[in-house]
Every structure is written in C-alpha cells, then in structure tokens.
Length: 640
Image (cartoon, rainbow, N blue to C red; front, side, top):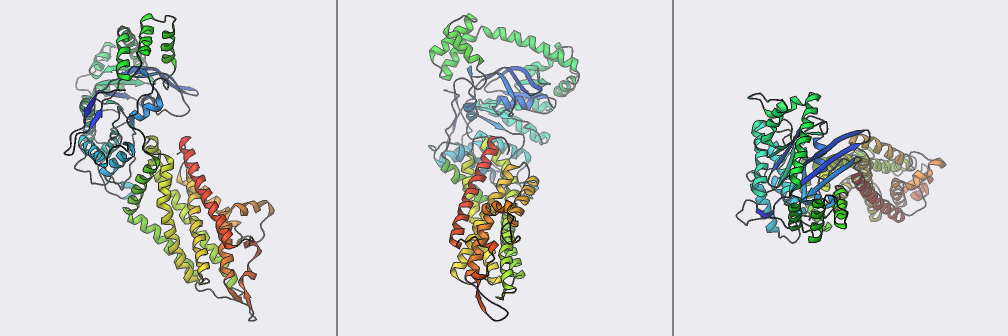
C-alpha cells in the first residue's frame, strides 16, 4: 500500500526516508485453549502516530492479546474475531513482515557491540538493492533516534558470562533498534520497562513517544504499574481484567470513566495503581466491563455513518480496487442487502484474522547465501572475542592428548602387552572425542537456542542459513582441535610412523569428532534443557561405546544392529586395521608376527581402512543432516 513518508533523524551522510504506520482495528477478539477462555471479545483500535498502552493484573490476558495482535499467538489455541489493517482484513503472513515484536527479554549476542548488533540486523533485513553505505546511514539514523550514538562501540555484555557491557536501558533500546532498522509500520513491545529502573523506564517510553509522534509509527505496548511520568506519555489506554475489556479510550479519559462508575481516584494517587486496586473486586470489574460495553456500542453507532468514507480511504491507501471498495461500502450502507457486493463484504468480514488482502511487506528477504555470509562473519567474530572460551576448548584437547600419551607412553611391540594396550589406547582416544565435543555442543546450544528462536522468529534469517554458517565455523575448528589432540597422542604413544597410518588416524578421529558434535546438537535440539540433553547424550554414547568391539568381545545377536549402525565401529575398525597393518609384534619366543594377524575378530569388520573411512564420512554427513532437520522441526513445532 502507498504510505506517507517521514524521515529518521538526518545524519551527516544522508537523510533516510521511512514509512508511516498504519491503523489497526480489532473486533471481538477471542482466544481460548481447551477448558479455558483467555480473551473474551476485545474490540478497539491502534492509530498511527500514537501509543496504545495495555495494563492489567497478572493473568489478565495482556501478553496473549499483544501476541495475537502481533500475529505471534500461542500454539494450540483457538482465535476468533477480526483484525483490519487500514480498513482491510489482515493477512497474517504478510503482516508479520510489516510489523515487529520486541520481547520482554533482551536476547542479544554478548560479544557484539551496539553498532554491530544493529548493523547485522540491517544486513539481514534490508534489501540487496541498498548499498552498504545506505545501510550504514540507516544504522546511524537508528542509533541517533534511540540515543545510542555515544555507546555504539560498547559491547552488549552479559553478567552471567562475566562480560561487562551496556546498561539495561541501553540493551532494551538495542532490541528496539534491531527491529526499527527494517522500518516497521507497527511496533509491539511486551513489558518493555520490565527490569529497568524508574529513570531508564521513563527515558525508554519517552523515546517510544518520539518514534510515534515524529515517525508516525503505530506503537502498542504492555506495561506493569507505570508511574505518572510514564503514563503522561500514553495516547490511548486499554485496561484488561480476566480477559475482559474494562476500559479502552484515550488516557485522559480513564479517570473520568472510573468516576462515572462511582470509583473516584484519590488525589495524589497514581491512577494506574488505583485502577489495579479497583480490579481486585469482581463487582467493580463487572460494573466497569458493562459500562465499557455501553460506551463501545455508542462508539460503534457513531462510526457506522462513516463506513462509506473509510471504505474509500481504504481503497485509496490500501490499493484495493474500486469495485471492491464499492462493494464494501454498499454492504455497510444497505445493512445486509442480499447482493454479490454485500456477500463479498460479508465473506471478508467473517473470514478471520488471517484472511484478506496481503499487507505489503516493507522489504523483501535477502538471499540465503548472503544470510550465511553475514552469520558466518558474526560467528567468527564471536569466537575471536571470547578468547577464554576458545582457549579452554582448545586446551582440553591438548590436555587429553597429553593424558592419553602419558598413560600409554611409547608402547612396546610385545604380543603379550603391546596388542591389548594399542587396542585400548585407540579406543580411549575415541571415548575422549565422543564425550568432549558432544558435551561442549550441548552447552553452547543452550545459549544459542534462545538467540536462534528470536532471530528466526523475527524473519532475520532461515534455520538453514544459520546451520550452514555454524557448520562453516565449527567444522574447521573441530578439525584443528583434532589435529592438536591427534599429533600429541600419536607421537607420544608411538603408533606406526607411516604416512598412510597418520592420515587414517587423523581422518578417522576428525570425522569421529564432527559426528559426535552433531549427535550432541541432535540430543540438545530434542530436549528443552541442557540437563536432559546431557542425560540422553550420555545414554546414547555409552551404548555406542559398549558395542564398538573393544569392551564386548562377543556381541549378542540382538545387539549386533547397534554395532552395524554405530559410527564408532567404523572409526575404530579403520584405525585398528591401519595401525596393526603397519606394525609387527614380537612374541615371548622371539617370533615376529605381522600385526594384521593379531587383530581380534570383534574389531575387524573385514573392510579396509579406506572403505571404513568412506562409510564413516557418509555417517558424518547423514548425522549432520539429521541434526539440521531436528533443529528445523524443533523450531517449527515450537520446541526450541
């Protein structure tokens, strides 16, 4: 639709045009889950250039209503009612692209600076047709608009990780800036002042007021017990109690509304505190709800005479064909006259909140390959800026390599001890590279899942782009870590020093580690928390290790399938056959025996090291794909 243009604060580089918001009308919105009705017929509107504040006690339905209005409803519930955007029934899939939703909790990458956080959003959300310079200019504009210019090069930080950063109020502004960069027409904020002190809360709402007034954005927010300095910045006000609409109208009319119901706000009392105290009595709630219904009915009658004009405005501003606008106007005017026009209007009115003409998205999506490039750069930057984490992860592989090397230092070639010690050392190395990377993956995933859920949910990028970037960053890192472990352990233990044996050893261990990490991600994505994931992962790895061919010499027939599908089987058999094929052993009688003749049958699947590695590579690829599909399913079924 054609919209009025405004401007961000001009920067030295350029002025950046932005789109004004739209008017949203909601009619008789209801939401229920099995056995409970949460919203009970909420009606009202949100206007461009104004702030609508939603207040209510815990459990009143504030967040549920905001979620439905922002097209982010709770899965499994039933939604009824209608939402109109500039007079046109809303199409939810397109509305999400033209609006933004700022969650109560700030989910940001701790190692990124304020500017980098917003710039990443710009690179992922703004169209490819915009130059880098134009995107930088828009970032400058958003930083200036939100008062973040002075701290733009400060890292976000995270107290839990021991990283100092910006204040809570600045962090909340960054969350808003990440969404504002795409020039949304409507901004929805859930408990936007939660966790902020009074001064920060007032400053933040003042910023939102400026956005609404200067940029003509439609802003809707839920808030918990605001002070008088905050409420003075509200334009419109909605009060909910038990899922029912207690009051809807301008903020200045709220106190007179309560007065009319016989509930007078004492002098020097914060009106919002008074309102919430009144709602503790069910009799007051019933009185106020009934009064609001009468006022709402009167407003509906007054608005009825203007429906022809609204239909014409919708046709002009929304891009609706003149015939469709005429049909809607005729239906409104004739009051249900049986005609094709009236029928079409009725169909639009009753088709639900996901029906109707699509709201034009602000910008098209950027290509997946570009998303992957941006996310790869961000991931590498995160690695570099966490030297303690990178060092600790790398050091543990060096330490474990030293541990294996010292435990099996320079093995001899005697048949009596050398054979079993070699088998044990190779198996122990596999055990180290099964638990270490998989446990690390679970720990990292527990931090990544929240950011992934928010950013994918807000259409910054796709799960596939994120997974591709993660693979590009993690796989080379894992290979380097394997080389560190492998070289230390290999030469300290004293394995056969041939080029083919070294290559088989390192390749098998590298593929084994990558597969173990994928299994860790898979278990983490299947579960809701890291504790459950580690329990499941431990169970899986212990089973696979048990039937790898070293611990159990004669695997029961009903467990042979485990050995067949286990990636550890092929990795272990590859290194055993390679090592023993290049080593000769000496018996107590002095007889030299080729190593391949001493390989136990339970560790020999009859395949060459090369074939075992190819099968292991296939399992590695399949496991990687399955872990990706698991993450994708977890996101789509709201399990992240």
